[in-house]
Length: 205
Image (cartoon, rainbow, N blue to C red; front, side, top):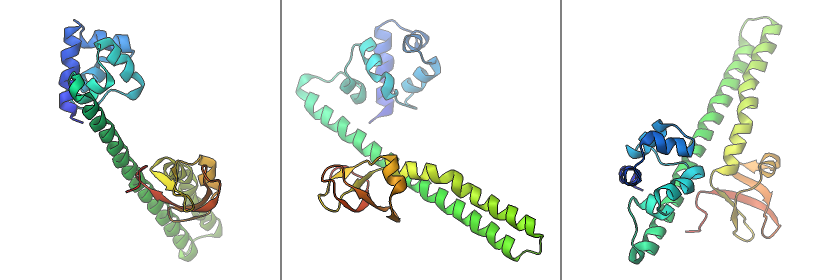
């Protein structure tokens, strides 16, 4: 999606309605700075207010995401392109989240190992060794719930039995055995347990 084009389109429709950025922002219960960011192409309207914005500007969501009023002859094609772009953006965001999870895991484990090794070999008192070991485990304990959350929501898990791709519950991911990003879970479709691998796309290649 072309954010610059979308931004100019929002500004054009706002002016057609004789609204200032501040007036539009007030109607949407947001700041005029947010409207300015849209119109300058620095961000897109949040999905929670997109319908309300489109209603005020008298356009469809498809018009908004296309950056122009879509004529009926092009409507289905533009809708298909916009939906495809949304799917691609989710996949890009999921990949970023999984990279962040990898960094979080590496940093927390490296810090824990470094402190444990230092505590084991440094000429310090026993109580200090215990304190260092406890401190070493804190990042792992704090970051693990966040990493599991990323594992849950980023991408999908593919059932080895029926091939169904799904986003599992947090409790399922938390309680499952795993080998890297492959987890032993129950499929919500066939209800069979199998080692389900992490995939990015909802649709099979």
